[in-house]
Length: 225
Ligand SMILES: [Mg+2]
Ligand SMILES: [Zn+2]
Image (cartoon, rainbow, N blue to C red; front, side, top):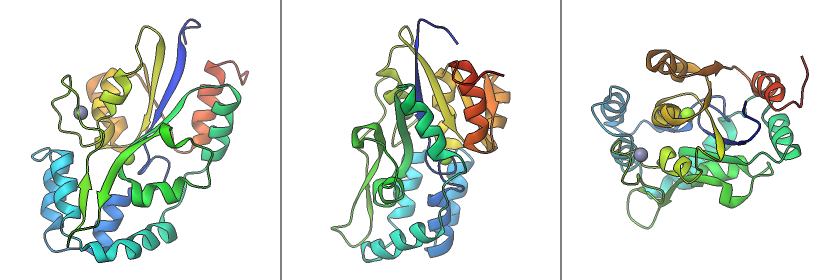
């Protein structure tokens, strides 16, 4: 890792900080009619993430908000080693951002126990004032991204110049594909690992945050092998 550049971390939420993807879990559990087709089209690349996530949540009544939050709070687990990893990055003053394609109403309660500043969390919002849930896209793609991400990770990453920063992405899936292409280093799991292999992107596979601690700790000189 270049000594002249500041490492900066962009960490996915669903399936990365949490053990599994909460949007997938919510849809499977509440199972609104028609969600499966939309989800398959997103996974298959025939539909953008923004369009697909928006349409799937629009199938759920706003009145189910609390039930959804309770379900996620009771079922989502935090990946092993996450709090230790956060402690490491805080100790070494490494900027840490959560960059998530998830939605604030279930993401923020899950992250509440952790020491992460509000302005270091990028995710989508939701409006419950109508009959059905409407996703609010507060961080859309800039002019450099044509992916229709919803929450655009590359737009966030571009705010930090590659001349100055060593941009590190941690992720697992679809919402990380575009960010992985411009990151200097990717910690990957699940289908993101396959995508990195396909793209020829430099990546280090992980299972728990302890795996990331041992690799990243050596890179920043916090841990000696
Ligand atoms: Mg994910
Ligand atoms: Zn984008």
